Image (tube, rainbow, N blue to C red; front, side, top):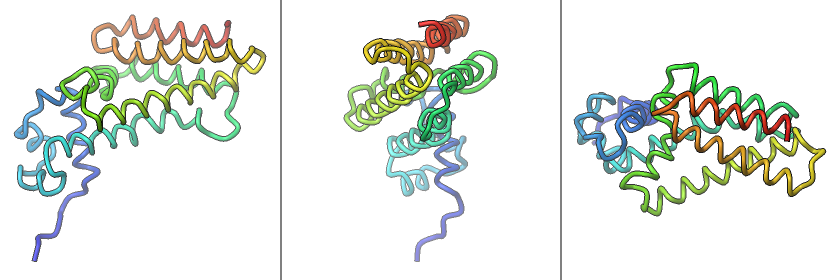
Length: 193
């Protein structure tokens, strides 16, 4: 008879996410993960299959806990006209004015895409879906905020804002002021374009 599990896999994934986010996949060792999760190596392998399996669970927790809640206002039916500004201001606050993992380390997925995992098909699929979801959410926010603009202009504005968001998440770990400027430019573009 097998032993009863005494931990929640979601909690383990969140604990591991903190380490992966801080150190990156390559520089995170199994002893690091054991210390962060309170599990021994055999429990990690039994539950997640491998370090990579635990990383995949950590990525899912990132999407569930960090990304999707932040985008909720841009995905709701009947998006409020100010939803995009609310999203951009909230992101700016989290990255520039708080001491969050996002502020300290940038986007977990963008960081992973630039690592040794960048050519991995599973990660590429997750990052591509993430990019598409963010672009669609921002596009919906632009449509709600600026229905007065021609469709081609709204598309350009959406692409510009999406690019500024991605750039801010990539640079925040080394230059918070630059990240803030990029998000301020996106907020300004939405209101003035």
